[in-house]
Image 1 (cartoon, rainbow, N blue to C red):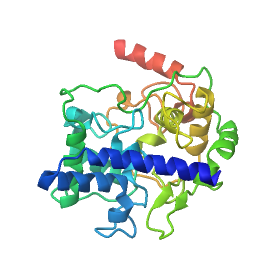
Image 2 (image 1 turned 90 degrees about the horizontal axis):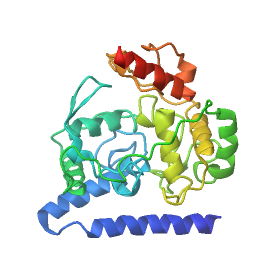
Image 3 (image 1 turned 45 degrees about the horizontal axis):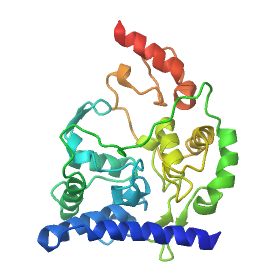
Image 4 (image 1 turned 60 degrees about the vertical axis):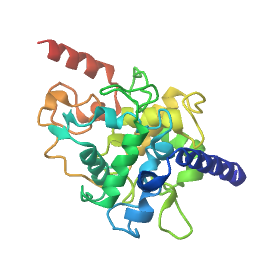
Length: 298
């Protein structure tokens, strides 16, 4: 098993190297390579033992944005520059690319914001824009984001999800979900899925529909959307299990000023519909979606 995962890690590394080799030479290329490096190995530079600053929890951006933001339906970053700045209902403001990066810094990496004029922020923005070169404004090419799953007609089950986790996930993330640190303890080879060093409850992956979709197309390690290893129901259930575990809390009191805009799976009240927090978190989601659609028409 260890040999198998060593081979998968090597293949992932080769994919990242192949992507980096596409970056042009010269001064611009140097900045792009630094941006790529920051997304691939965020903790080395910005983590608890980072050599530039200590801003984040030890995870890397590519733990969510797989292969430094290039993997299809692995939260690819190729559509980002074509779709920002844009209005975000969650924060009720227009976010730039820098604002979106800082949102991830605070939520997914449970950390602090970067100076938007810093070398690191400029490099990350340059790399993201380079990835999105040629994507028309406002368009999202195939492979962007995650490949959403059809709603189940029942709630996702954290208890069944634990069974999936123990069979399919613990070999990388550990039975305690705390991941695996690199030998120098600077970053994670496999990230923690809950606890103080994981994403907080303000992150996009704390929504079960997002995590289930991500898991289906990308997990266990080595999976692609063309060759999934889990059934839809297994993906829903393991996402429910992971997101039922303890993690840091993010102050979301300024989020969703218009509660009618909250997604069906947003797990914190108040709501503009008649469903409770438990159903919003675990489903079934279709009744919520139906009522929201009716309310929109009124």
